[in-house]
Image 1 (cartoon, rainbow, N blue to C red):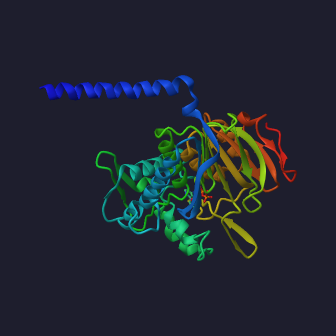
Image 2 (cartoon, helix red, strand yellow):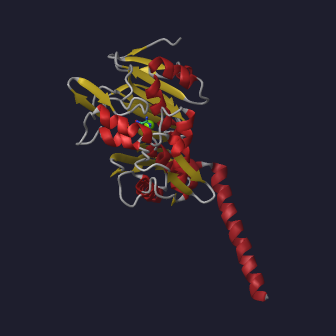
Image 3 (cartoon, helix red, strand yellow):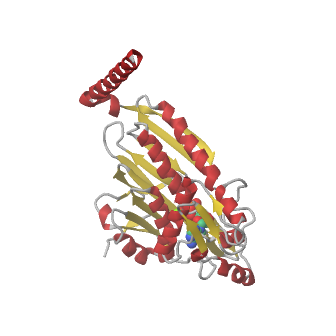
Length: 355
Ligand code: ADP
Ligand code: MG
């Protein structure tokens, strides 16, 4: 009995000590928000891309490893064409049987199917058989025969997917169907990294998953971060312009990063599941600015399907989302929320007036 009371007392003391501690740092505010100019940062090659994370919050070095661990964990679950990944397991069981997956994988699949519905298949979670046929961005890329395209088109119906949230099972109903989350996985994982940082008290950071950027908090001067938009026509490094941002995701996709050239015709990597060919329009690059990176990732793909004019009008209708479109003529178009914020700094490009 006495022992119990002592234990209880210790627990109370401990709670008190913790909350006292919390109060001190809350009151003067310095500890929690202190930033360092030389961040804890690391770069690794994961998911076929360069992943960089920089943490500017003082004393939060150990969170860096936790963030990379989460990236590796998710990569293992959702990467396609990788034996042992849950997505590949589903693909291999297409037309055979439902597969039980983890909560993470289920969430990604659910989001992918929502984007598919939302865009009427412009974004298509089961585009796998078609992307595999073209293989754009890989050594074996080629322009397929019409006959081959005709064979895979019937396998691209996202309504032929059966999911069950309670059982956490996923079934591709037709043999030969394949999920491809190449257009969504980086955004999904970026959001999960943001969660790891937030849950561990990081207030200031920059996450870059191969083109999916997230800027958290403010910089060491307490100002918003300056985000540069990459020139879609040149190798990584040069920018078109910039704008200030805080706690936002910026996803950029360009046609010149991965493409295939056959007899003078350029085929880029976002494919139309109705024709079996890449979407062909005036977009050279598009960036989407949103709170969630998964939304930015899905919306860049949908924007590609629409072209500059229709794409701009479409993004204007989406709440709290902004976009920058760059045409093949090097004209830059921005949504209304970026007016007065986005500046073109590269004189090869022209900022166009809206409406
Ligand atoms: P990246 O950041 O590599 O440019 P994106 O987010 O633009 O990637 O997505 C491109 C990838 O999406 C392609 O490589 C392919 O795997 C997949 N994909 C291509 N067309 C579609 C489509 N219509 N719907 C969904 N995914 C697609
Ligand atoms: Mg995308």
